[in-house]
Image 1 (cartoon, helix red, strand yellow):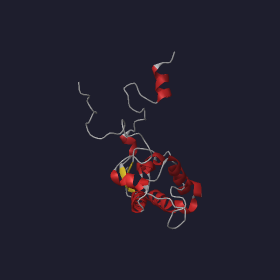
Image 2 (cartoon, helix red, strand yellow):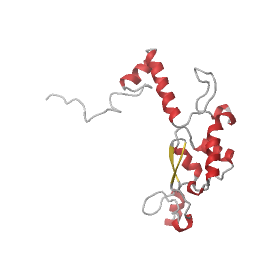
Image 3 (cartoon, helix red, strand yellow):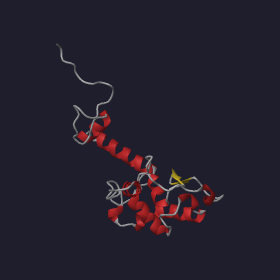
Image 4 (cartoon, helix red, strand yellow):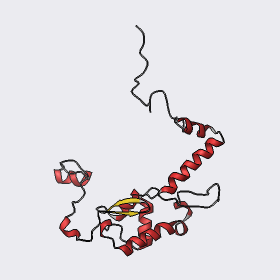
Length: 175
């Protein structure tokens, strides 16, 4: 039989719900602790480890954040709020230089249509490039572009029963 403590460690949940993450003692944090700081036009939580906090930036996932921490020489388990300004600057430069250092299969934009180069898009570039791609498809009047423009499902999903907007429940049969 599994006790409550064993179930906590197995599931990661505390007995009152929640995620089971360790609470940080605010007395240990110090005066220079920053609860929120900005990198790449995104707010990063200072209470989370930096490898997890970097994932709040659009275009950076867990694998990429671990690589960026390794390239900048920062321990990924260190709390983001404990980073010095030099470490934050090294993170910013590692994010900017990531496209030139990482292999092609770790890029999120491989063989770009305009430049035919591999790139790693971060923050606002992701949204702008996506919007440009959709407008290019709609300008060519492709099926995908027209579905995007009209707000319908693009990849062939079912429309009759799922993803219906509004409070419409369906057609009522006459008696």
